[in-house]
Length: 80
Image (cartoon, rainbow, N blue to C red; front, side, top):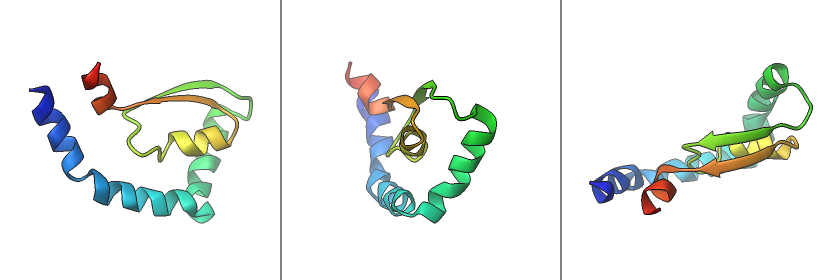
């Protein structure tokens, strides 16, 4: 069962990750997220757990804002 779940999520991962990588390299792409995060989380550094992080489309911008982010994803959990 674990293998079929990991296989399902990994099947489209390369294509999805490529799109997220382009997004993360674009300041215009991350500016909206950073603005939203600042509005709701404030500017003081927080400890944040990002469950289901994938390629880091949420955790990387949060970390770049100074937050301490722990990122985990399904395949990591299933391997343990």
